[in-house]
Image (tube, rainbow, N blue to C red; front, side, top):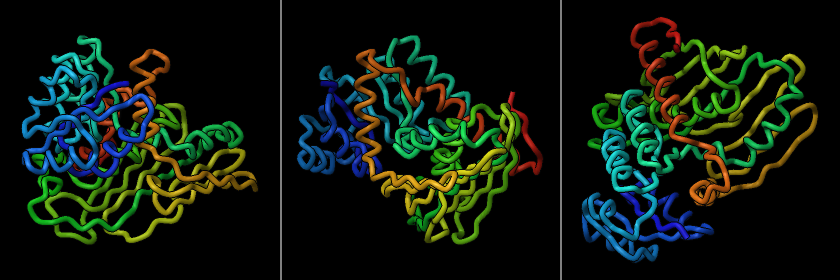
Length: 323
């Protein structure tokens, strides 16, 4: 029964990770941390945590905590992952992993030296629809083009950390774009070239609300990720075109709704799955040595390399080669 501590227990942790820990087998919520102690206590009492703190050090120094979930603004990920590793805690880090690839590399190496597990919250890797899709990829022949779309309407309030590039690293591309690019790399492998465009179509933010990224895969074929916070509805989430066939994934939301996969005239209905619960339970099995990590720290590091290349491409108007 792994005992979890949450650094940054508001936001996505409160909505997704904490409820998953409460329901998951092999996990127990030990401690939560937000900067307001009264809010921390409220979250702890709501979900049955045994301790609450208003400083990250409280979680890191708690001898009962075995796993730390870092769910802070992005600019703090590096600091708390390094401190968790130093404290001998296993780590689940929210995406995007860091502000840049150099930080991500440092995080991976620190956890490796400390002998602790580091995983990223790339929850789409855990979707049963992704497993079902991988089973039919060979039937599609050689990849020609794969396209991912993550679209939703997401207004932000002035002053949110996500709108400050010094705290977030970027806009929609860093946020849900990290999911889209990771999924493409998870399915089709490493990338040779990246080209991208970013801009604002709906909101006058200091970070982009819309982005389009093109990829050339090392194994052949092309990929495209289109992400936006200014589109109210999404239909086809994923399209894969091969030399022998195609597959299409329809989903209103890849995180919370069931998927419909159409391939070769066959339709597969994939029911809803609690992706965060699947992630938490998998994490326990990894720590126990029963499974290899499905979303290891190295995947987050590689994701940062692709994201950095995309931003360079958008800024300089050229293709960027990944070494």
